[in-house]
Image 1 (cartoon, rainbow, N blue to C red):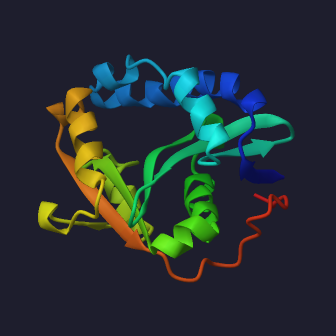
Image 2 (image 1 turned 180 degrees about the vertical axis):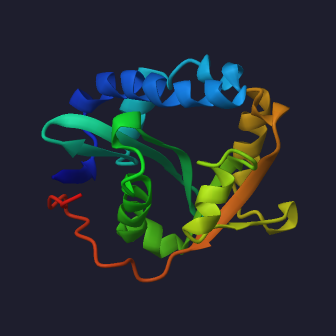
Image 3 (image 1 turned 90 degrees about the vertical axis):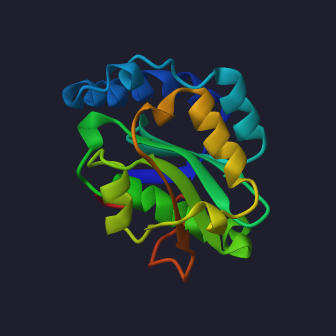
Length: 183
């Protein structure tokens, strides 16, 4: 059973190994620089825990996925959603996104936004399949331009990038209170 919940400080040290394992997949498509990118700093994750914007998916006590968000004025911006390779292809990433969509703070903003690699199958095309649309710069909600600038500074613009958004409608039946979900 998978339980999705807000992260605690105890979860933070478990994020880097998960992130490193998931990043290895980028080597298979020639994006070694992404695979070699260091994990998100624990200080950033701890701040996200304090601000209730880091969610984790745990299966029998083992961290299987996480989602780091940032509440912008008009959207919840998904900075990172990562699923461990041994939990991939089970719909866990989409389930994480549904869970954060149900958060009242997200619902109040009405939008989810993210930046993504355009041509990586588990990025742009995946997000399109789960309802995200590519949006032009003139349509970016407040705060997204700073996220794009951070991506560029990080070197991610070496590959085609997209800014995507999804309107938050009523979330599908989903227990956002951390009730276990069979997967």
